[in-house]
Each structure stands twice: as structure tokens, then as C-alpha cells.
Image 1 (cartoon, rainbow, N blue to C red):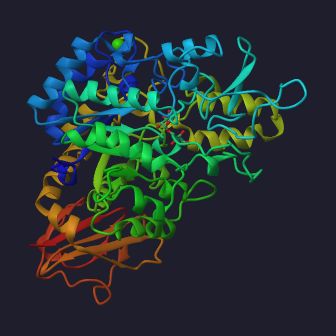
Image 2: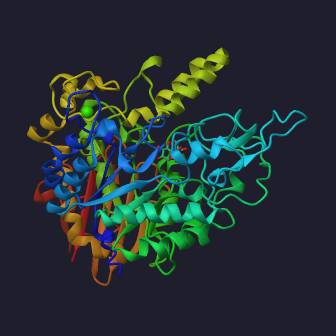
Image 3: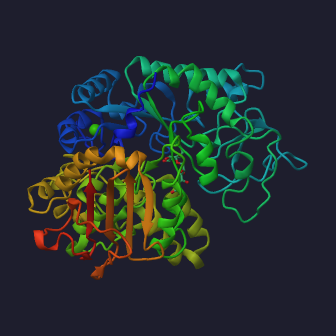
Length: 552
Ligand code: ISL
Ligand code: CA
């Protein structure tokens, strides 16, 4: 049934709120997306992963869903959505929807029913427990949520507590209840019937909580308790059920957002011989610069492990998404002098790895993280961090500095389409600040310039197709593994190979081909600098230079 088309695809992520505003109210929407379909086709992407566009009170920008079968008012209607997917399909672009079923919104009908009384038929759709302590005023266990604070909230109506691993407006669904699993299956099938091509499954690793909901052991873990619900005891069983009853019936891509897992677990849950996930997003490489500076050697080591996965396991490669700060200046210098070289170098590496590459909106024009004032942060996580910092003034300055680097808001500023007011994103003041660098960094200007990041991406996507079989099946080899300046690797398949060199620094660096590969029998497939015949096989890399050689 499954063609596994995604192994040859490049996927573009849209965060609808910030992509393009079609009706001039300052909020991105579906008509805005429709107006940019030609742009996506031109870029050459094969699929779009659309962050949630369902009905939602937007406590967490759509990751809190109040109706899984309808479209958020601000984004448009089901008719608009149908026109969008038809437009995508007409252009050869598939649509991957976001499936957020670890939790719903507290404004979902299920939760309204559930909280109304202890004997309501929906009571068991969520986790309800008595509090601890004499008066029951302490949460049922010591788990902490992703957005700071306890993972439990007290509800007056029935005098019990409910679990929420994210905001208190995102109560966790109780997957041990077979009715909940059936709801998920029905929702997936509903969208498949409308033509979607797959799902990106939000925090899917958290859906099965271990029986007993025991206290978390490590008091210093910010996610105290996570060991009791990350890949919990019935995880595989529940996912296999949804897979059997829905996902496997379609030629779909099911990519799990797998927070909290390591390489060994990844290997188990994205193996195509098992009816679980098709592929996953891992986070290990995102933690390299969690505390302190980015260190390329550590980053490479993590990625290399995923690159050496067994042939039945398929991975996904990303550097940016709506939860991460931008690559620039995270991994490369943000100065205008280097920005495009950095953006294209990173693109080259990401696109030449085994696994499906993802591009997050704006990455293809080299958008950067954005400086924000305290009141310009919009993300619930940032807002909660700021509240906490205001209670602990002594660490506020440092805390705000860290926040400016790590905040999810960095990736959520409106897409920069042109040099017009509000970056051509909207005609009205956008819901979130536009990065002031839009005058220089925008799609229109980029595409008109001699060195265009967009055009480079486009070329890279097309070229990747020529070598994707070598990337998928070739044998991985790495050189200069310990280096913090260069990333050099190859994939060999019989006599054919792809060989990649990338300079992560601003200094010239010489790659000695006695330790790497003699490329004289290969052709230069891509390079982000202008070069001449004479230096094609002289391996001196300029600042942020990347080259790909291929022998077919
Ligand atoms: O964003 C994070 C770190 O910057 C993660 O901890 C994140 O909360 C986690 O990866 C889960 O993310 C997903 O589910 C959340 C939602 O807020 C995120 O936007 C989504 O990608 C809850 O639905
Ligand atoms: Ca709008």
C-alpha cells in the first residue's frame, strides 16, 4: 500500500499564522497560503507540513484544538481549505496535516463534558484524579509541564485535578480509553477522505502514561516525571492500532514529533518493518547548544549516529521549525556580509543527509532570529518564562538574554515577502512584530539579487533528486570528525558517490584530500560560491563555503 514517496521528497513547513495574510487582518490564513502556492511550486518542494489550522482558542497558536474537523475562524473555512489542498495537488505538492492528539483544548466539547460531572460519559477522555494532602489541595503527583509549573490543575466543578503536560488549556487525552483511540482513528480517516497525504504527529511520544502515574524521581529535571510518560508502557500498542485502522490504509507519511527519545529508541519506533511511525523528528541535535555555545563536533556526532541507522529506519532532517530559533545566528554569523553564505552552506548539508529534509518557512530566504522587547513576546512559553523571571528579579537580566536566544518567537515573526510595509505579509499591523531586517531580507529582494538563497535552494532541491538514491542507500563515511570548523562526509554506493565539504567558520580552511577523497573523477554538483574550473579540485574552503561532488 505504501510507496514511501517521502524518501524522495523535500518538505516545506508552513506556520499559518505567520505565513501570509490574505484578508488584511494581520493574521496569516489559508487564502494567504493559496496565494503563495506558485511560489512553493517554483521552489520545487514536494509536500507541505501545515502546522495546525483547526478550530482553536489559540492558547498555544492552534496546538490546542477545540474542533478537529473544522478550520480556525481566523484562517478561513473548510471550503478555503479544500481549495488550498486542490491547488497543492494540482501543482504536485502533497499536504501533511498536524495531528495534535496528546491533548485537546479545554474548550473542546469532550473536555467541557468531561469536567461537568464525575459520571459524564466523557469523564474518562481525560485524566482526573483526587488531590493529595489533607484537603486534597496538592496535585496528584509531582510532574511538571513543558510550559513551567505543575502538570495538574484543580477544577472546582468536581473538586478533582486534571493533567496537562502543556498549558492548562491543553488537557491530556486519556489514551487508555479505547473510545479516545477510536476518536483519533476517526479524525485521521476524516482528513484522509478529504485527500490529505499524511500527518505530523505532535508530541506523539507522550501519549501513553504509565499506570499509577508515579512521582518523577529526578527533582532537577525540568520535566519532572517525563520517564513515566515518554514512550509509556502501551505506546507501541496504541500507535499500532491507529496505524492499522487508519494510517496504513493510505499512501501516507506519518512523521512523529518524538520529544525526549534517544537514538536507540528512535531506531525502534521508525522502522518500516514495524507498524508504527514511518519516520520521526528527533531532538538530540537541538540540545547541543542548550547550555553554552554551539559545538560543531558534538552536533556532527549526534547526526552521524542517525546517519548510520539500519536501512529499514528512515529519519527526517531539520534545522528549523516553529519551536526553534533560526539557524542564523544560531549556527553561523548573522552579519549581512556572511548571511547568505551561512544560509546556503547549512542548506547544503541538511539536504545531502540521508532522510527527508524539511525547510521551515523563511529558511529558504535566509531569515534570521529577531530581537524582541519584553512585551513583544507572544508565545505562551516565553510569556510564562517572563512571568517567572519577574518573580525572581535577580536572575531576570540573564534570563531575558537566554530567552532572546532560545525563544520560539524567533521563528514565528511574519514571513518576509517584500520590502513593503509589514514585509508584504499583511496590509494591517501583524499579530506579531516583523523582523526589522525585512528591508534587506525578503523574498522579492532575494530572488532579484545576483546571489539568491531561494534560487540556491531551488537548485539544490533539483540536484538532490539526481542523487537521492545514493543518499538513501549509500554507505556513510565521515572525515575530520573531531573538527569544529568543517563537516566532511560521503555516501558511497558501488562506484558512485556523493561527497560533501562544508566550512562552518569564517576562516579559510584547507581540506587535505589525502585524508578525504580524491575528487578528480567526480563533478562538482553544487557550490555556494562562484568557482572556476581551475579550483574545482583544490579543496580550500572560503567562509561558510559548501561543496558537493558527485560521481554517478
Ligand atoms: O518547543 C519546545 C522547546 O523549544 C518543546 O519543548 C516543545 O514544547 C515540544 O517539542 C512539543 O512541541 C509540540 O507540542 C507543543 C506545541 O507547543 C509545539 O509548538 C509543538 O511543536 C504542544 O502541543
Ligand atoms: Ca488574515
